[in-house]
Length: 364
Length: 214
Image 1 (cartoon, rainbow over the protein chains, first blue to last red):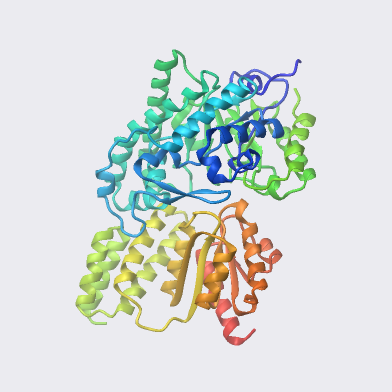
Image 2 (image 1 turned 60 degrees about the vertical axis):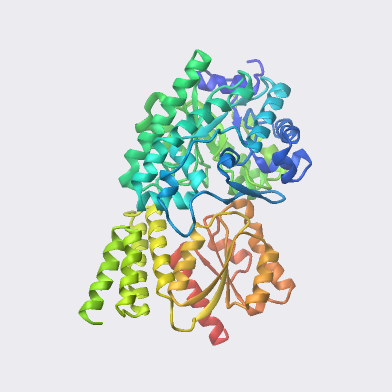
């Protein structure tokens, strides 16, 4: 079989076809920033440096599928959410809900703001444009966004929104179903524009359905809001593009509720991307995902981006990849993927071992 | 405690258990106005919070319930201030990242148990810890780490304390989602806790060690 591009490999998986080899999916703001040659503060505000970091990341680490990496809070900048930017970290300084004094009015009085009005989001969109122009179809892009309840949590603060869901659920759910729903649909569908038609899928992010975070009595209500978020995004994308864009996912967390997601979202989704390594990962083993869900979805997993890739040896990375291939390759449509962003510091030797092991064990 | 006092404590407990934040605050104020000792109110709130933690371990409660319970506990503690000297002093913070959920729960438990707690906050770096130890002279430094990328900051902090000659003055307790007992031994921390109740036990153990000169 002729050598495929990263985009071709990923598209094969999404279409249920067999690529030349298993594609690799990962991304990292930390490594992109390091490769951009400037400190995080400059990276965060300079689209050309941000794009340069991503382009060098693709050249150096050879993922087939990746993302222009940025933090999660740029999108809520129009609401006044500010961030700390240290040498290599971006974290929120203050979100909307008060940390010490719960107040339902914050939710009741929430107003719509243009999701693309913030300076940092404009920087991000410009960087995506540059990357798309430079790399073209070499790699697959899967732009995406979270649903309304997760976005509300980003805006209010994760802890605060969890707290407030228990203390005054009506106000929280109403804000998610109203203002944040409209905002989410506008943000999500606007986010694909800089990729100029070269996206392979839309990635729907899951955070609020994590088994540990979510209060069971609110599972159905939250899931319904997330389904509505995705349905409205898909409808808008269909009108915009004239066809149905495949839906990939990013399922964040150590206790991903894959069965619940499959039950609630059914065939709306094409792929499940989550954290599972051979020795270390979330509490949903890769074997279970392949057995239980591999006939319905592309499974993107197998890289433990925390211990093995970060702290392990190249030999351990090789074993991790071999184990993942033994479990998943040929048993489902499989993408070798990290569970989330790679942190600071995986060695070049480990990153190279990842590609070498995929080449050794991942051919079809 | 007379019957009237018991009724006030019952009202606080009922509001707490139903996650009625504003009612719990009002019930606490009424109890104080009626002369219920602050210590009794704190004991009631602490027992309720420990019950919530047990429910969390049994998977009857989620993280959302814990955050709501901790908000009520903190508001109650703010009103019913302790009137006894602290048993020991802890400086606590999250290294490198902005995660504070687990760290705040431990802070609450330590405060409720009678420790004086100085919260360095989040995105704390080794130099910040050294500065806080020099200024506050705590018995224990509690260092949370929630992101793998920030793990090295725990060992760097211990190294920085050693470098400044402060290591022998304090006990270092580490914890957080990405830590382990193995890791704590590797970096020569004095204690490790996988969850909030264990962090409280460890803090008390380390304090006893310090007082006994072990």
